[in-house]
Length: 154
Image (cartoon, rainbow, N blue to C red; front, side, top):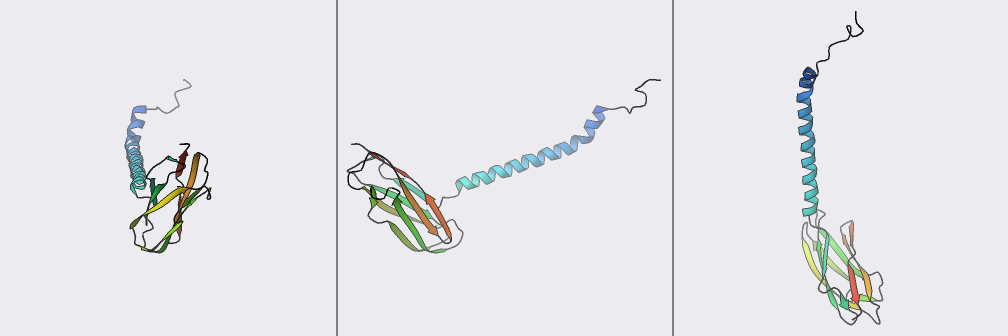
């Protein structure tokens, strides 16, 4: 009589065959979830941003002006009334704009408007970078973008 006579016989090949199908099902579910998450991430990249912007010229010399082009898109899914777009430099007296805000009476769902703001270094501006804040109030939502305008020494 041996110490090992009373223990059950472990047949690993049989045990693996029993769990093989559930493991395959679990792997398919995990791969499916990863594919769904990947598509969700791609969808957020493709979806338009509420505020898109670009400078006509950047950097500029301190005696030059440039246009800031702003596209505002209604991403809320509902028509929005009285949409307000404001453009202001954080260092306001150094960089100014001919108009600081623009009102859109109605911006339909998924609709967009293209606006243009003239950015002007005022007075004796030091060379460097200046943050411009663009805010858009669309319905109850407020969006913010912060482009950087560079002023060169020449």
